[in-house]
Image (cartoon, rainbow, N blue to C red):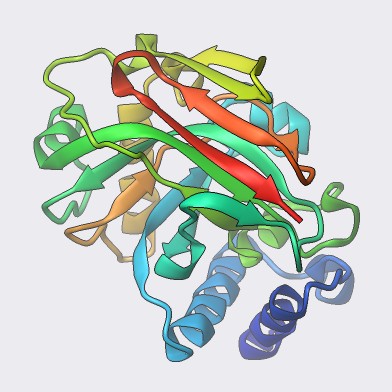
Length: 256
């Protein structure tokens, strides 16, 4: 398996905004461990060009999202500073841009091994509402396998992080109502429980995934716990807002 070549193929497609066929058509033996290596190699190319890793994202943590993508297990991807969006997101160069509501965590301390829920909360310095923008490089953005998704950095494109981070302070994240509105009209609604039953447990799952690869969550990381609902297609002119009760809100305007 030529990991570097596959990573370069996807990286070139991302940088030039062009569709490619899913990797498993060319490399049908691509498995999940190899796919994570392709993802790592792709991120290494971006770091070499000056990007900085700021955290990780969980994917396929909600039943709604797994049904939408016809996939059945949580995965993770990488966030870099170049992926952060503030105020406005421009569609130029995108292929299949979609947006979904998330809960984000920020961690002061490194999380290694298999921390429990209390350990995750003890290391957390803030939570808040976030929006993840997805954009697969694959033709049609569906009908592909878990290794295909992982190799393409779990389809992650950009992220709108919380405008304000708040302390958990014993708050129940599973009962927080997330309402994603487009142009003032609510389009997707769920509670935090849609994310792995409890968003904190999504971080526990992430640490377990990292441990299987001999890795840990670095200090200072931001983590997206996973989408609470299905994603909405983006078009120019949209105003997307996520309200999340006591966690606050965040928003983004979509431009051509």
